[in-house]
Amino acid sequence: FILLGFASLIIGLGFGSIGSVQYVLPDFLKEQLSFQKTRPLHVYLVINWIFSCAAAIVYYYLSTLATKRSYSKQLAAFHFYLQLMILIIVITGFLTGKFGGREYLEFPPWVVIIIVASWLCFMGAFFSETVFVFKSAPLYIWSWSTGLVFFLITITEAQLWQLPFFNNNIIRDTTVQWKALGSMVGSWNMLVYGSAMYIMEKITGNTKVNHSPIAFFFYFLGLT
Image (cartoon, rainbow, N blue to C red; front, side, top):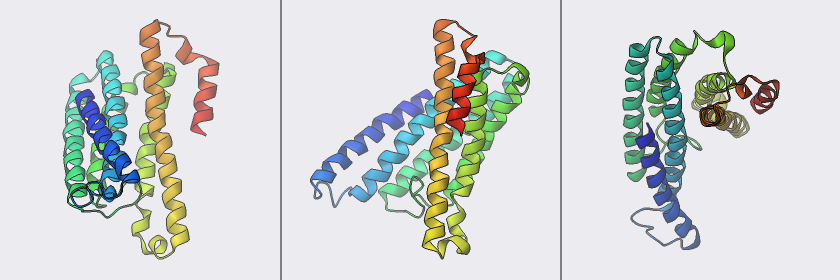
Protein backbone atom coordinates (compact mmCIF):
# COMPACT_ATOMS: atom_id res chain seq x y z
CA PHE A 1 0.00 0.00 0.00
CA ILE A 2 2.90 2.37 0.71
CA LEU A 3 4.43 1.61 -2.70
CA LEU A 4 1.06 2.09 -4.36
CA GLY A 5 0.58 5.38 -2.52
CA PHE A 6 3.97 6.82 -3.41
CA ALA A 7 3.68 5.67 -7.03
CA SER A 8 0.33 7.47 -7.19
CA LEU A 9 1.88 10.59 -5.66
CA ILE A 10 4.80 10.71 -8.10
CA ILE A 11 2.65 10.08 -11.18
CA GLY A 12 0.00 12.48 -9.87
CA LEU A 13 2.61 15.20 -9.39
CA GLY A 14 3.72 14.60 -12.98
CA PHE A 15 0.23 15.14 -14.36
CA GLY A 16 -0.27 18.09 -12.00
CA SER A 17 2.92 19.72 -13.32
CA ILE A 18 1.77 19.24 -16.91
CA GLY A 19 -1.63 20.67 -16.00
CA SER A 20 -0.10 23.71 -14.34
CA VAL A 21 1.88 24.46 -17.51
CA GLN A 22 -1.28 24.01 -19.60
CA TYR A 23 -3.11 26.47 -17.35
CA VAL A 24 -0.60 29.12 -18.47
CA LEU A 25 0.07 27.73 -21.97
CA PRO A 26 -3.21 26.13 -23.12
CA ASP A 27 -1.68 24.67 -26.31
CA PHE A 28 0.98 22.66 -24.43
CA LEU A 29 0.37 18.95 -25.26
CA LYS A 30 -3.19 19.93 -26.17
CA GLU A 31 -3.58 17.23 -28.80
CA GLN A 32 -1.78 14.44 -26.94
CA LEU A 33 -2.79 15.10 -23.32
CA SER A 34 -5.26 17.94 -22.83
CA PHE A 35 -5.97 19.77 -19.57
CA GLN A 36 -9.35 18.00 -19.43
CA LYS A 37 -7.37 14.78 -18.88
CA THR A 38 -4.40 15.97 -16.82
CA ARG A 39 -6.52 17.68 -14.15
CA PRO A 40 -8.69 14.66 -13.16
CA LEU A 41 -5.65 12.37 -13.44
CA HIS A 42 -3.78 14.60 -11.01
CA VAL A 43 -6.72 14.84 -8.60
CA TYR A 44 -7.52 11.12 -8.59
CA LEU A 45 -3.89 10.03 -8.17
CA VAL A 46 -3.10 12.32 -5.24
CA ILE A 47 -6.34 11.25 -3.54
CA ASN A 48 -5.27 7.64 -4.09
CA TRP A 49 -1.95 8.54 -2.45
CA ILE A 50 -3.81 9.72 0.66
CA PHE A 51 -6.03 6.63 0.85
CA SER A 52 -3.25 4.14 0.12
CA CYS A 53 -0.81 5.51 2.71
CA ALA A 54 -3.57 5.79 5.32
CA ALA A 55 -4.50 2.16 4.60
CA ALA A 56 -0.86 1.14 5.01
CA ILE A 57 -0.72 2.70 8.48
CA VAL A 58 -4.05 1.14 9.50
CA TYR A 59 -2.94 -2.31 8.34
CA TYR A 60 0.36 -1.90 10.17
CA TYR A 61 -1.60 -1.20 13.35
CA LEU A 62 -3.89 -4.20 12.75
CA SER A 63 -0.84 -6.46 12.42
CA THR A 64 0.16 -5.52 15.98
CA LEU A 65 -3.14 -6.77 17.42
CA ALA A 66 -2.74 -10.36 16.19
CA THR A 67 -6.24 -11.58 17.03
CA LYS A 68 -7.53 -12.76 13.64
CA ARG A 69 -4.52 -11.82 11.60
CA SER A 70 -4.97 -14.44 8.85
CA TYR A 71 -8.51 -13.21 8.18
CA SER A 72 -7.38 -9.58 8.06
CA LYS A 73 -4.52 -10.41 5.73
CA GLN A 74 -6.88 -12.11 3.31
CA LEU A 75 -9.23 -9.13 3.24
CA ALA A 76 -6.27 -6.76 3.01
CA ALA A 77 -5.02 -8.64 -0.05
CA PHE A 78 -8.45 -8.37 -1.71
CA HIS A 79 -8.51 -4.68 -0.84
CA PHE A 80 -5.06 -4.09 -2.33
CA TYR A 81 -5.66 -5.89 -5.62
CA LEU A 82 -9.06 -4.26 -6.09
CA GLN A 83 -7.52 -0.84 -5.44
CA LEU A 84 -4.75 -1.59 -7.93
CA MET A 85 -7.37 -2.68 -10.47
CA ILE A 86 -9.32 0.56 -9.91
CA LEU A 87 -6.15 2.60 -10.38
CA ILE A 88 -5.41 0.95 -13.73
CA ILE A 89 -9.02 1.25 -14.94
CA VAL A 90 -9.32 4.92 -13.97
CA ILE A 91 -5.98 5.97 -15.48
CA THR A 92 -6.75 4.07 -18.70
CA GLY A 93 -10.23 5.59 -18.84
CA PHE A 94 -9.01 9.16 -18.41
CA LEU A 95 -6.18 8.76 -20.94
CA THR A 96 -8.63 7.39 -23.53
CA GLY A 97 -11.24 10.04 -22.75
CA LYS A 98 -13.74 7.72 -21.02
CA PHE A 99 -15.44 10.11 -18.60
CA GLY A 100 -18.88 9.89 -17.04
CA GLY A 101 -19.01 10.84 -13.37
CA ARG A 102 -18.84 14.00 -11.30
CA GLU A 103 -16.15 16.08 -9.56
CA TYR A 104 -13.46 13.82 -7.98
CA LEU A 105 -15.33 10.87 -9.55
CA GLU A 106 -15.14 11.75 -13.26
CA PHE A 107 -14.62 8.13 -14.29
CA PRO A 108 -17.54 5.95 -15.49
CA PRO A 109 -20.00 5.38 -12.60
CA TRP A 110 -19.77 1.57 -12.70
CA VAL A 111 -16.22 1.83 -11.31
CA VAL A 112 -17.80 2.86 -7.99
CA ILE A 113 -19.04 -0.74 -7.59
CA ILE A 114 -15.42 -1.94 -7.42
CA ILE A 115 -14.50 0.94 -5.09
CA VAL A 116 -17.28 -0.03 -2.68
CA ALA A 117 -16.21 -3.70 -2.84
CA SER A 118 -12.61 -2.77 -1.99
CA TRP A 119 -13.79 -0.51 0.83
CA LEU A 120 -15.95 -3.26 2.34
CA CYS A 121 -12.82 -5.45 2.44
CA PHE A 122 -10.99 -2.63 4.23
CA MET A 123 -13.83 -2.19 6.72
CA GLY A 124 -14.10 -5.94 7.29
CA ALA A 125 -10.39 -6.26 8.03
CA PHE A 126 -10.45 -3.25 10.33
CA PHE A 127 -13.57 -3.92 12.38
CA SER A 128 -12.91 -7.67 12.71
CA GLU A 129 -9.76 -6.74 14.64
CA THR A 130 -10.74 -3.55 16.48
CA VAL A 131 -14.04 -4.91 17.81
CA PHE A 132 -11.95 -6.53 20.56
CA VAL A 133 -10.37 -3.25 21.69
CA PHE A 134 -13.25 -0.77 21.32
CA LYS A 135 -14.02 -0.65 25.06
CA SER A 136 -10.73 1.14 25.70
CA ALA A 137 -10.09 2.38 22.16
CA PRO A 138 -7.63 5.25 21.71
CA LEU A 139 -8.54 8.29 19.64
CA TYR A 140 -7.08 7.01 16.39
CA ILE A 141 -9.39 3.98 16.44
CA TRP A 142 -12.41 6.30 16.60
CA SER A 143 -10.96 8.55 13.91
CA TRP A 144 -10.28 5.65 11.54
CA SER A 145 -13.71 4.14 12.26
CA THR A 146 -15.63 7.30 11.40
CA GLY A 147 -13.46 7.84 8.32
CA LEU A 148 -14.22 4.33 7.06
CA VAL A 149 -17.96 4.55 7.70
CA PHE A 150 -18.44 8.05 6.32
CA PHE A 151 -16.49 7.34 3.14
CA LEU A 152 -18.86 4.46 2.37
CA ILE A 153 -21.87 6.71 3.07
CA THR A 154 -20.61 9.67 1.06
CA ILE A 155 -19.46 7.76 -2.02
CA THR A 156 -22.88 6.10 -2.13
CA GLU A 157 -24.59 9.47 -1.70
CA ALA A 158 -22.43 10.92 -4.48
CA GLN A 159 -24.12 8.52 -6.92
CA LEU A 160 -27.60 9.98 -6.36
CA TRP A 161 -27.13 12.14 -9.47
CA GLN A 162 -27.84 9.01 -11.52
CA LEU A 163 -31.47 9.03 -10.32
CA PRO A 164 -33.87 11.10 -12.47
CA PHE A 165 -35.15 12.98 -9.40
CA PHE A 166 -31.69 14.53 -9.04
CA ASN A 167 -30.22 14.67 -12.54
CA ASN A 168 -33.36 16.31 -13.94
CA ASN A 169 -32.90 19.26 -11.59
CA ILE A 170 -29.57 21.10 -11.63
CA ILE A 171 -30.12 22.59 -8.14
CA ARG A 172 -30.75 19.21 -6.51
CA ASP A 173 -27.95 17.61 -8.54
CA THR A 174 -25.34 20.22 -7.56
CA THR A 175 -26.49 20.49 -3.94
CA VAL A 176 -26.32 16.76 -3.22
CA GLN A 177 -23.08 16.31 -5.17
CA TRP A 178 -21.17 19.01 -3.33
CA LYS A 179 -22.62 18.05 0.04
CA ALA A 180 -21.54 14.43 -0.54
CA LEU A 181 -18.09 15.28 -1.84
CA GLY A 182 -17.43 17.85 0.87
CA SER A 183 -18.22 15.22 3.47
CA MET A 184 -16.10 12.70 1.57
CA VAL A 185 -13.09 14.98 2.01
CA GLY A 186 -13.89 14.94 5.73
CA SER A 187 -13.86 11.13 5.69
CA TRP A 188 -10.33 10.88 4.36
CA ASN A 189 -9.29 13.68 6.70
CA MET A 190 -10.38 11.38 9.54
CA LEU A 191 -8.12 8.63 8.18
CA VAL A 192 -5.22 11.09 8.01
CA TYR A 193 -5.85 12.54 11.49
CA GLY A 194 -6.03 9.06 13.01
CA SER A 195 -2.82 8.07 11.25
CA ALA A 196 -1.06 11.20 12.48
CA MET A 197 -2.13 10.55 16.08
CA TYR A 198 -1.00 6.92 15.87
CA ILE A 199 2.38 7.92 14.41
CA MET A 200 2.88 10.52 17.17
CA GLU A 201 2.14 7.88 19.78
CA LYS A 202 4.67 5.50 18.23
CA ILE A 203 7.33 8.23 18.05
CA THR A 204 6.89 9.56 21.58
CA GLY A 205 5.84 6.36 23.34
CA ASN A 206 3.13 8.39 25.11
CA THR A 207 -0.10 6.35 25.03
CA LYS A 208 -2.03 8.75 27.29
CA VAL A 209 -2.48 11.54 24.74
CA ASN A 210 -4.85 9.42 22.60
CA HIS A 211 -7.11 8.90 25.62
CA SER A 212 -7.08 12.51 26.80
CA PRO A 213 -10.26 14.65 26.95
CA ILE A 214 -8.64 17.42 24.87
CA ALA A 215 -7.81 14.97 22.07
CA PHE A 216 -11.41 13.69 21.97
CA PHE A 217 -12.71 17.27 22.08
CA PHE A 218 -10.84 18.12 18.90
CA TYR A 219 -11.85 14.80 17.35
CA PHE A 220 -15.55 15.61 17.84
CA LEU A 221 -14.93 19.17 16.65
CA GLY A 222 -13.38 17.83 13.45
CA LEU A 223 -16.16 15.29 13.03
CA THR A 224 -18.93 17.88 13.28
